[in-house]
Image (cartoon, rainbow, N blue to C red; front, side, top):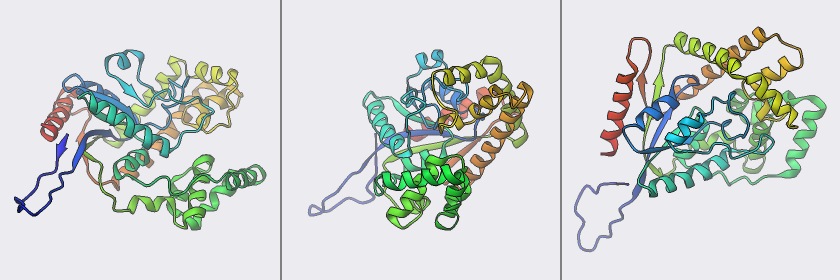
Length: 329
């Protein structure tokens, strides 16, 4: 634990409050940049446990499409917030925040360093900034009304309602991500302000954190994404998707509309060839990475580590380990 220092000695009448903040490592960056590998390699030098900040790895049975850590990696380094929900169950940023906070306390109690690892930027921001996520409780009647509108006129009609009320969410939320679109509208109805405005609140920090990101040249990152799409298909992504459908999970679920699964469902419906499926997964993932990069460009406090062909991976790991040791020595 790190204590905030007091600049001057107090008088005998003064009461001093020493606020202790929990140590926290954050490793972020766009998809396919190497976040998980870096976390695993840092763990060889520093005792840490990984908390996934990936909005899809929380779902059971969805391993290949979410690029979930292997059983071998999870046996070497303890992971949290993985396989907590079934694909038809809800998982929100509020639940992530609460569950991650509990995991951080548990890990810290064992004397290990909690490491938030993932590319879902809004999750990380909510955790670090301590957004008050309970100021707009669920409104079942409003949600039912929005779902009815989506059924009648399509998800885009619901998404369009954000244009004037919450332009930021309108721009960043995909129309097919109906659950989060409705949540943003629900928040506006309850609070009278856009849900995205929470990012601007000046809240007291809860953690003494180091946030590092992996930076790669755009074309190199896209090449890694293309190679991963091919590898995911080779590892059995189509069979994984088929199994999910055979288990009764609808292709219309928010989880099944995630990257890789939506395209795989299209293949299984005969709408795409295997080559077209691979290309569409790669294209959509590149677009997602571009949105992530736009998000991270606006985030404060990220220390970027350059990675790429001109640097040895061991040098990257050494740099990251040095930063962690310097911060939390």
